[in-house]
Length: 160
Image: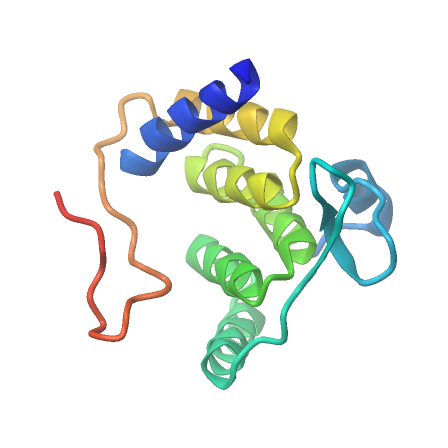
């Protein structure tokens, strides 16, 4: 329970303010059954749902942007976010890890990867990423990131 409180605290604090080799990815991701994303805390296997047309189109745009400039931090972040929206959390973790290797001082990659670690129930790794993001954010002005999944009215749910 202590870990969950720490995750929620760090999530709130951080939220408000070339592709990886398979051997490195294996260090980042726990083993799961084929095509699974994660195991629940009770051992249930989680699989990704089939993405809808809008999610697939957004993902294709992100892939195209990444292909045109794979050294753009924003392109890497949006590729990882769009992959996560398609519920491929394990692949998103790999993309955010690529961003960390290319931009080690950019806290956004640790924050986004931390969220995806929560998605696959890797809480200790999420905490480590949120702590690193918080450390990297010291002295950086708070700014709201663009909403990746606006609601039906195309409005962000974030209010400052």
